[in-house]
Image 1 (cartoon, rainbow, N blue to C red):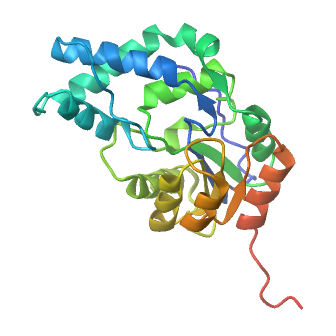
Image 2: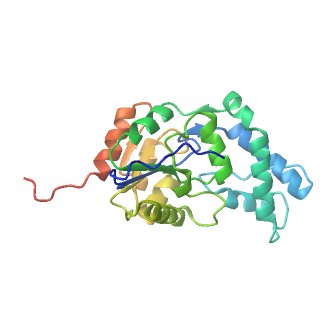
Image 3: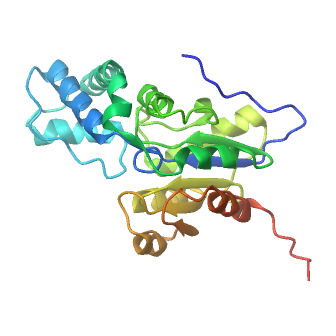
Length: 252
């Protein structure tokens, strides 16, 4: 699958990493996702899906195990890889429904484009969605142009989200040669779980109250900045730039 991301010219050093949550931060495709889960469950178990475990910002790997459990299926060693494979196929089969039954979140496209213009920035995703489905979700709405999918963290990787954040930082360091820490990594997401991942994993956090959590909840959880949504691209850029610009301690 072709990826539109291209590394910047060699003289443009990458020294900012922006990681985006996907669902309810950049897109809302819940109807298609549920349908794909139902199909994958049927393929793997031979039974109809009665109850889908709530996402709540969790990775697909965790949702799969809970979904099997609440439907009375005892998980075996091969259940997870089989389910994730079936989920990828089921979601790809439904990709033409994404724009008809889903939506890009307000301002998402302009925000990604605007952040991409910041000096020294690389953008990727930190998501509970498996990689193939993450790519399809963003491509459906033209949100993939400024995203480097190779350095992201995804739902098939069985790590807590905070650890997955550190995995993404390591991939970015290997790609660009710059250490990424809590000083120059920003996570943008809509849930308190995202905030917890940033705090534990080592990143600055911009909460967006477009999904699971209210502005007050995001602030209370420890987000560095909270925005109502992504509709003001200049506000998003200012937030990323302000958090990742080194402060001259000698000034004044």
